[in-house]
Length: 438
Image 1 (tube, rainbow, N blue to C red):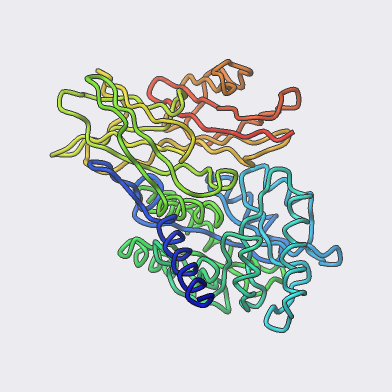
Image 2 (image 1 turned 30 degrees about the vertical axis):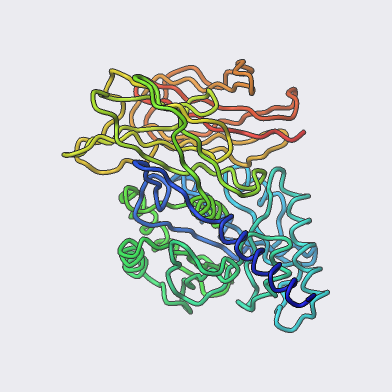
């Protein structure tokens, strides 16, 4: 009888686990496989903290407004550990993630030592990098830790099997990466482009693994010229390629696959939508891209979530007009409101990415960096509101040229809680949720 009860219990737990991560999307809504309905995802991961990662790679990524992941060894005796440089990178929106304390081979460690390495490295990073949650880990020498131990501390782990990752990985603790540089399969810009094209065909995710840049002494160095040419290619093909950190792509996939989208009400001029998932809301706060055909007679629409402006765009195709927007699961109802103006449209029938506005670190204490892009010179305002909609700070009110911009938000005098930053321009309205932890 006990054995029968145990089997039933296990089966019930499995069913609950499966249902907790199932997607339920009501008609006529669609959810982007990748952010902005792009065709594929791209992540650059850098291991060990080699010198030119800081001197060359990070400034280059900052120039393009792209974000990378630094898998970090945290032992005080590690020669390339520079917390000040990692803190600066985190302030610019880059992910600082775990590469163990001692850069050890996990296949030679017992359970106790594996636990210590994984737990301590995470704690070291959280202590040193304000606002960093440290949800991902890269296995040194590509030797994986035990999955049951990894699950206690991380949402995903990276190996280096050389393949493009599926849009829905079967095992988040064995995410593939592709080694770059002299000793890897990616040596030239054309090698990168070939992988991009393969990922686009399968709607997959390219995760690249880099160490040395030029002659800094790091493993399998990659030419900085090749790296720049590759970033220029991505920059010119952002309708197809979504470049993000390892952790944020993991967040997006898990949210997308656990997402529930349902209409609560449809009125003549408003549609109320509920966007939820079953994940941990302290970790899974990345916006998922959703779209819906505009109702008949609607020329355009605006979108809010929990009463705050959400990032949105209007997609104009030959047959159907869509309102496309970003929504954070479990962050309040989304309201789509009829608007007579045309908004931001793509007149070529291609899905435009939602205008870029990124906050990192998030959660943060006491300051964070707000990064945004302007397609043209505009007069813009950037303001911060509290959860009640009261303006608490104006960060920007003036004209800016086109391109990438960064503003520091210092919340030293504010209480812990949820805030929203809102970017407004004549043809742009974007909002992001922020969590201050004092």
